[in-house]
Amino acid sequence: MTREYKIAILNGDGIGPEVVDSAKRVLTAAAEDNSLAITFLDFPIGWQAYRKFGRTLPPDTLAGMSECDGWILGPLEAGSYPKDDKDYPMASGKIRKGFDLFANIRPVKSFLKGSKKIDFVIVRENTEDFYPDRNLFKGYGEFWPDEDTVLSLRVVTRRACKRISETAFSLARSRASKRLVTAVHKSNVLIEGDGLFLEEVRKASKAFPDIILNDGLVDSVGMQLVLSPEKFDVLVTTNLFGDILSDVAAAEVGGLGLAPSLNSGEKYAMAQAVHGSAPDIAGKGIANPVAEILSTSMLLEWLHSRNGDESLKRCASTIDNAVTKILASGEKELLTTDLGGNASTGQFTSEIVREIAAP
Ligand code: NAI
Ligand code: MG
Image (tube, rainbow, N blue to C red):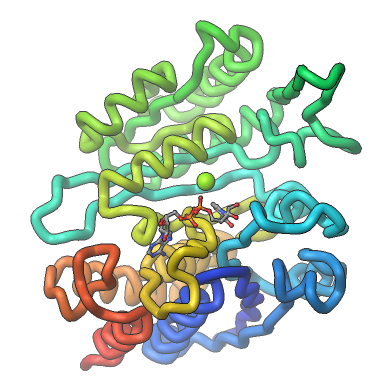
C-alpha cells in the first residue's frame, strides 16, 4: 500500500524561492513518474517570516515542520538579519541544533562534460565545534573579556564525534566505491579537541573492518582536495572544517550551484543546498537549481533508509538520472549561466521535468 509523504517547503531568502520552486517542480514530476504521493506544506522562514512575525523562525513553522516527513529549505540570508530578530543570529543553526540534525552530508561529484572523475562526500558534524550559536545550552560561545579581545569557545564531545564517525563509515559501506574514510582534523594544534575526535573515529572504525581509515591535517587535505580530488571517497570532519572544505570542493566540480547537502538526524532530515541566498543574482531567474534539486533527492534516499519504501528510492534515482543527463549534455541552451550556458532557472527546470516525463 502506498502512503502519502508530507514535505515542508521553507523558501528562504534571495534565490531561495526560485531554487525551491524548481526542486518542487522536479519532485512533483518524479513522484508522478513513480506513483509516489507527496503533499507540500509551506511554512514561513527568514525575511518573509520576520516581516510578518518579527522573527525568522516562528514557533508555528517549527511545529508544522515536526509534523512533516521531510523538509526542503532554501538558503537563508542570515548575514542580513536584524539584531532584534528573536531567532538571531541564525535560524538554520537553530533548526540543526533543535532537531538534532547532527550529520551534514555534502556530496561532491563531477557531472559536467569533460570533467575529471570526482565523487566523494564530506560528512560534517553539525551541532557543535566553533559554532557559537549552538555549542552552549544557554548563551553564545563568543565572549568579550575586554573591548579589544574576543574569546571563541570550541566544543567537541565524545557523543557527537562517535555518531558522526559511525555515519561516515556506514556511508562508505553503502557507497561500496573505494571503501575509504578520511578523517580530517588539526590534532597537531587542537591537541585535545581534535585528539578526542580522532580517538572516536578510530574507535568507530573497529566496527567497520571492511572500510579503510586514513586521516590527514585539514590544511594538507585542503591542498589534496584541489590537486587530486579523485582519490577521496568519504571525508569525516568537525563543523567548521567541513563547512570550509565543502565550498572549496564545490569549486572543483563547477561551483556552488552544483553542491547539494542533507542535514540529517535520527528522526528528521532537511534538504538544504550548500550555497547561500546569492543576493547578487536574486530575482533575476538565473540561479542554478541543481544543488537544491539534488538535496531533495538526498532527502528521498534518507526517507527510504528509514522506512524501506522502494518508490522513494526510485524517485531519487529518477531525479539524479535526469540531472546527470542534462548536465552531461554540455549544451549551452540547457545549462544555467554559472555553468557557461544561457538557460534560465525556469528553462533548466522544464528541461529536467521533460526528461523525467519522457517515455
Ligand atoms: P552565496 O553562496 O550566497 O554566494 C556566493 C557566490 O556564488 C555568489 O556570486 C552567488 O551568485 C553564487 N551562487 C550561489 N549559489 C548559486 C546558485 N545556485 N546559482 C548560481 N550562482 C550561485 O554566499 P554569500 O554571498 O557569501 O552569502 C550570501 C548570504 O547567504 C549571506 O547572508 C550568508 O549569511 C548566507 N548564507 C546562507 C547559507 C545557507 O542558508 N545555507 C550558506 C551560506 C551563506
Ligand atoms: Mg557554508
